[in-house]
Amino acid sequence: MGRSILEVVDLTRNYRMGNDTIAALAGVSFRIDAGEYVAIMGRSGSGKTTLMNLLGCMDRPSTGIIRIDGDDVQGLGDDALSGIRNRHIGFVFQSFQLLPRASALQNVELPLVYRGMPRSRRRRAALDALARVGLADRSKHRPHELSGGQRQRVAIARALVGEPTLLLADEPTGNLDTATEREIMALFDELHGKGHTIVVVTHEPSVAAVCPRAIRLAEGKVVADGPGREVASAIAEVGPHA
Image 1 (cartoon, rainbow, N blue to C red):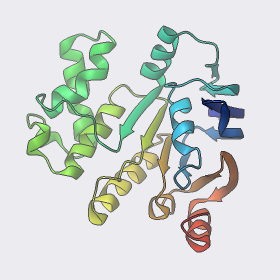
Image 2 (image 1 turned 90 degrees about the vertical axis):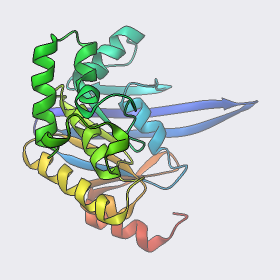
Image 3 (image 1 turned 45 degrees about the horizontal axis):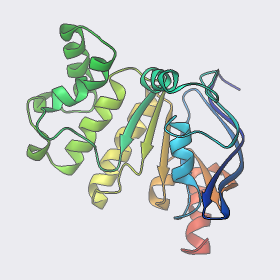
């Protein structure tokens, strides 16, 4: 086994709804090592969004352990969690979450602004990140001047610019057509080939199928963990309510 980037042990997350307790996650455990490319998949209500929020340190578990690159994150205060997010995690969102009035370059620079990096250094780093996703010639364009696929590439460049330990992508092709979905997944495959650790949260079997490994959730539990194509095929066969 390689170096552990993400370790989850007996993770639970409960929510109160009136007098009832809803278990969104019910004892989830898995490990992801450096350089892995993993899909976390499941239907609506499976717990994958709750899990993504926990892995991204945007929520806290009810019980259980989360370790990111060996660091236990449970019990940390808000400032410490913010520091973990900024150092270790590069986020890619379905809705891109780009600043509409800022250029591609300015959007990519943003995480480095929060780190207090000098302007000249962060500009060089942002230009390099845009080049890595094939958008070196679009650095001055604003989001409305870019296609959906290009906007998602800017979002990926922003996730990469801080050299994170983990790329965490939430439904990264959800707002894209089929052809653009293939382009974005090909980019993730290229990044994986260069050594990046990538976790893609998705409900799409077509997305999970291209990942070397897929973890499937159902009713807040891990029900499958294996080669992406096999896990994706199984969920496609059992139908939309599995």
